Image 1 (cartoon, rainbow, N blue to C red):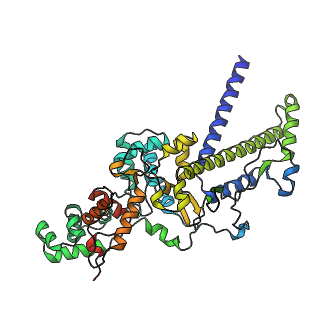
Image 2: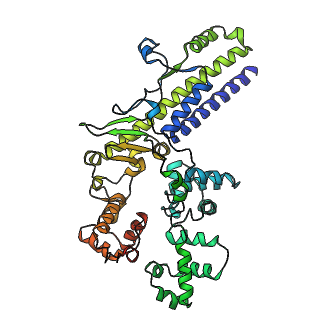
Length: 464
C-alpha cells in the first residue's frame, strides 16, 4: 500500500513538472527578443546552477553538458550590447488594454475572449476582423472553443476600455462610441444620428442631404459636424504616440538576403548556457548517496536548482528551435518576395501552410509570429506581414497568381497616389481601374482596404 502511494506521488510530481515546463515554453514563445533576453538574465541571477559558458573555454567544457543555442547576432551588427537600442518603457496600447481588463473581474472565459480580441486590434485600436469569425480564429490559433455569446461579451468588455473608441469595427463605429461617452446634448444626439443613419452622406460632406433626411436645421448639422471633427479617428494611436519618437522596434529575427540563399539569425543577447560544474558534480554525488540523504535540506536545494536549470535550458532550446523553424518556413514559402523585395510576389499564406511545412502546432506558430519583427535589408517588418488571405475571384484556389490583401493594398495605394488631387477618384472609379488591370474585386472591398490604409474618401482627399 505504501509503495502504491509513493508511485502515485511520483507520478503526480512528474505530471506537474511537465505541465510547468510546457507553460514556461508557451510563455517563452510569446516573448519578443528583449523580453527573452531579460528572462534569461533573471533566471541566471535567480538560479546559481545556471551559468554562461566562457567563450574561451567552450571547447574545453564537458561535451555532454546541456546548452542553449549560441547568441544569434547578425555578423554585420555590433555586438556591443550597450549600443543596442532599447524599447521605450512606456506601456503600449496592448499592455494598457490588458491591464484594464485585469481590473474588470471578468469570468475566465470572457477574459480569454477579451484578451484574444485585444490581440487582434490594429495599432489604431480598430478590430479589422469580422467579430463573427473570431470564435473560429480562437479555436484555430489557440485551441480554445468558446460560444459566440462569450466572444460577444468579451468584445463588449473591450469596448468599455480607454481610450474610448477601441474595439470599434469601423470608423463610424469608433466615432459613435466616443460620442456615447460625452454628456447628453442636442448636438451630441445629432452627431450620433449623422454617424448611425447617414454616414455615407456625412463622408461625402453632403450637408444638404443631412438637413433634408434628418429634418434638422443647417446650423444643427454644422454644429454636429464640428463636434465629430473633434473626435479621434485613431484612438489607439494616442497611447503609443507619446513614445513613438523614442520607441525603437528591436527585430526578433534578422534575414540577410545578400547571398544566394537567405541567412536567418535570431536576434538575442543570450549567452551559451550550461549547468554549473559545481551543481553538476554535486548532483552526481547526491545520486550515489541518495539513500543516506533522504531528509537532507542541502540535497533538496541542489537537486531542485539542478532540475530547474536543466529544464530552463531545454525549454529555451525548444523556443529558439521553434522560432527558427517557423521563420525558415516563412522564407521558403515567400522566397520570391525575399529575392525581389516586390510586394506583388507575396503569395497567399496562412498559419495552416506553415503548420504543414514545419509540423508545428498552429498555436505555436501563432505565438512565434505575434508581435514579433524581422529585419530585412529594406526595413523592419512584422512577421504577420507575410501572412495574407486570398482575395477576389481566385479566393480558395491553389493559384500562384492569386491576389493577397497586401497586393490589394499596394494597388489601391498606387492608384490613389497617381490620381489628380483636384479630382480624386471615387471608390467606384478605383474599382473600375483595378478591374481594367485584371484585378476583380468589389467596390466594398476597395472601401474596406482604403479605410484600412487610412486613406480618406474622395471628397476628403480633394485639394483646391
